[in-house]
Image (cartoon, rainbow over all chains, first blue to last red; front, top):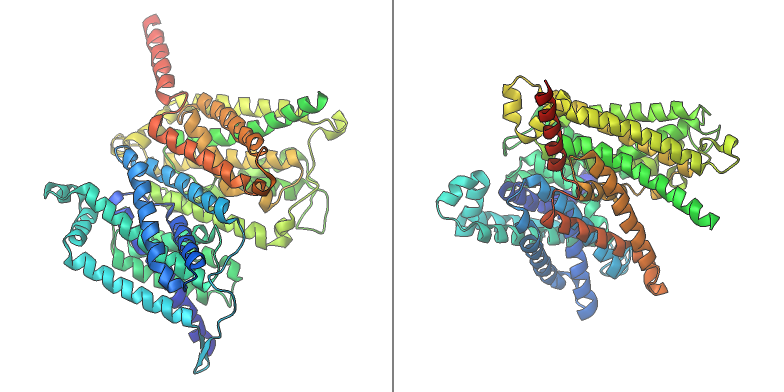
Length: 287
Length: 321
């Protein structure tokens, strides 16, 4: 029982990280109509941007986090405006290929600058808190707490602000939204700011939980896609639920299957959803 | 001098294998519009299948059945096709994007299996002693014979794909790609045609993987670098002209030349940067892909140029009648 609860904690931590990525991916998918394959590498970029701030100014990672987020959002918008924007007129699948190219470029730039070894924000081992026989680390509390705060903020943004409402409208029905005079490019820029920013947070959280590595984000791309599909494409709330489910299932699988196969579990779950309920648990975009 | 010729022959063999991959992707993406980003996975399945079946008995991994090479090549095609069929059955009646995501999943899982299941694949140590064809007859100088064999295989695949492209079957594939509702309205089972194209492509990718294994005689997860191979093949097809079989082959040659050229260029880098040169080469190819997509998405030899020629020929034949 205690093992099960311990895995639940790990699952929620991993699920929080996946959720943050999946929300952004789902928003981008809903509004720009293509699966953004470079999303995992935006995770990595965010983590390394924060790393630069940590090393240069010798500050704790939580102080560096906003800078990492801002820089990553900036890069995401820049990539969109220089590359993706030029390809919007053609078929969405061309954008998909371009995003694979961007993914490899981002990863290689990171490898070029920081090398392909592992890095950490701070050396040393954190002693976990022991609470009723469960091991909980400070970082775990920060990750889950931070995710909850961000999800609430995102909820308020989508429900209360004009931009948020416009984003939901674009995701639901792009043509209808444009008829009402929504400035499409402005909404797309906002989408990248939010998607890129959340990806950066996810990457920084992931690096706090594990280590920095040039393919850390790419390796998480499959679970993140699985979460977005599970929750229904274009449904931010579904993506959050999908992320937590994927995180939990991946951790629950570890007593039965080598932990190396965690992504395979996410994949199996995704395939199952695609067969049984292709619209996702929370009915998303039609397939 | 002889060393240079040997090097050139060996390079041409590699270009040929990439050419096969590019042709395979052309039937999936170029003709049918199916996005496969798991090329490396099917390539690896082919390589390891043939490796397990044909290598001499060993304790390093399962098998070593010492079967003849043609059996290995055939089995490689069959298994790649079977896995392609499974993936296709699940995803091909959904949106195109879902196939792309599913093929990433296959690529990841194959990568994990290669690394972790040492009993099956030799794990990170890889699989050695895969037999080379014609080694006995040519006395170690097998590259020439290999190249000839490869040219024959490519020739057969190319002619078959050209025949497929101009056939009724090829027209339906294009119809499914361009306008699925119309294809459906004229009574074509779009999912089935997609499945056929996808499986044929996967089989050719498996064949390419098996040939690669027999060329190098050694395969390992490192040597495959599935994501890099996948990405290079995509750049080759897009540069050459997707939808055009000649373009697919031309793209393989040109992009491989550029890719090797960057290796020579990065060779001039100072030693401390040399370890990171690989990353720099990928950036260059990545930028090339983006520039191509933005400026010349139809590639060097466009599909349209081939179609125009086909139509002219058809008109001439009509006049004769």
